[in-house]
Image: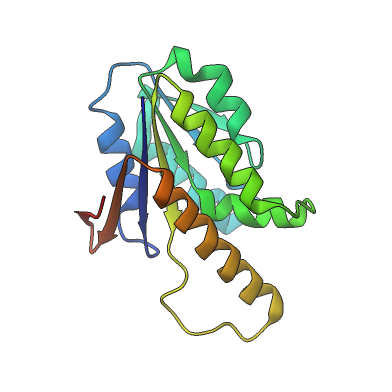
Length: 169
C-alpha cells in the first residue's frame, strides 16, 4: 500500500502523529515496538506509549526482525506503526549485525509489498554535536544513512517540529 516515514528530534511528536495517521485507516491497527524495556525508566516510557495508543492497536514487541512481522501480519491490518527504527538500530548493532543497509532494505521491501500502510518512525540524531566516542559516532552515522535510505524509499515523509508535521515528500 504505502510506506510513510515520520522523523524528527526527541519529543517532537513523532509517535503521536504516527498513531493519529494510522487511525485514518481501516481497523484493526498494529503497532510494532522495537524498544526493549531494560530499566525502570524505559519501562515507564513503554507504559506511557501503551496508554497513548490504547487498546485499538495490537502490539508486537520485536527488537530486530521487523520485516517478518510486517510480512506475516500485513494482510490482517489497515495500518502498521513501527516505532522506532532508530531504537532498533542499537539492537542490530548489539546483535552483531554488520549490514544495516541490507536489514533496512528488508524492512522497506516488506513495507512496500504490504497491503497495510506502514508508518516508520525514526529519530533524527544528526542535528546535534559530534559525539565524543567512537560507538556513538558510529550509531549517528548509521542512523543518518538508514534514515536517508528510508526517506528515499518512502511514498511520504514527514519532519516533526514542535509537535507539527511538515510534509517533505
